[in-house]
Length: 232
Image 1 (cartoon, one colour):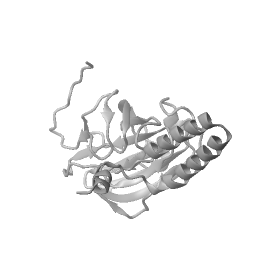
Image 2 (cartoon, helix red, strand yellow):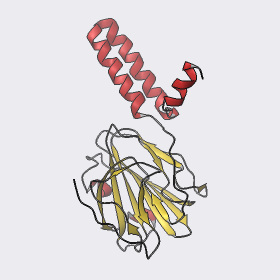
Image 3 (tube, one colour):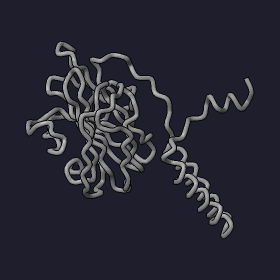
Image 4 (cartoon, rainbow, N blue to C red):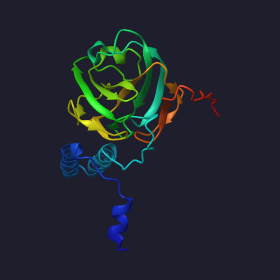
């Protein structure tokens, strides 16, 4: 195996959505470097961060239609019952919601938590509050995706954050997706909420780290045991 092949195997792909930003950061670094060398180095560091931010690694999703996988990389902010956004059409009764906060150092490619059909996509403009605030779920700009599966309907809500100004959705209504398939991307710090059928057994707690497409958030089997957690 050549050195180039080895590098290709190790290097993480970059999502095409990031190309224009990486090019802009790189150009700015060159201009700043021409003005003053230390500024050029700062620009180079910022460009390297931009490449890292838009990474799109391969993920290995468990093939079990009774499991719900994480739609986002990040930290679980909260687990509890909340009324879903009205535009999703999931009813006015509280559903189990898992909220995941993505910092500017997390991968921001969002993935389907379950396999099914895209039943609805609903965009709603709003504010750009800090995404780790609970009211961000209600007030911030968001894009809701409803996935219709054999186990029921699931809501995935992409929520813009304090510095996020662009939510990208990759799927269309009527499209079939598998668990772990790419749904969209949010540029810079943000949040994803997942609304689950009430009987679902949640397997994570606030503070847990999640990896999109790989971390199991919940089990759809009614007899699945609940987990307890401790911090250590």
